[in-house]
Image (tube, rainbow, N blue to C red):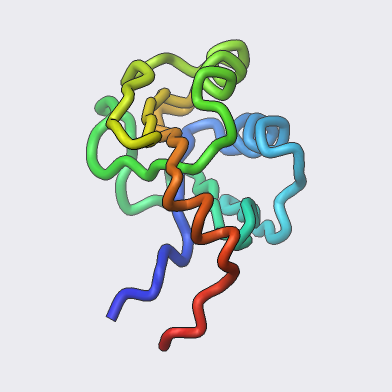
Length: 135
């Protein structure tokens, strides 16, 4: 039934600032943008990361970080944490070795969204194998 993540949406009270911040972090412009919504394609599988203006969102991080954490694969968790903290993010989950080469951490972006980071050997294997042709 589930084939993979279609789009991950992050909510921001200051929508223009969030789009600028993620444009800088991702080093790419949104490929799709309408009033109150911008979408980026990122990573080896061109996954979608959307930024939603708070007034258009079904939920808001206004009460603090909560809910599901999406972990994005990165080449170096420690370096990514440092870079994001330098850009105004706050540490939520320190770098944690989960065993077998799997490392995670999480930050809260300047707009209140949780951004998980991981170095996952299984992700590296899947990328090396190429896209799945399974239904």
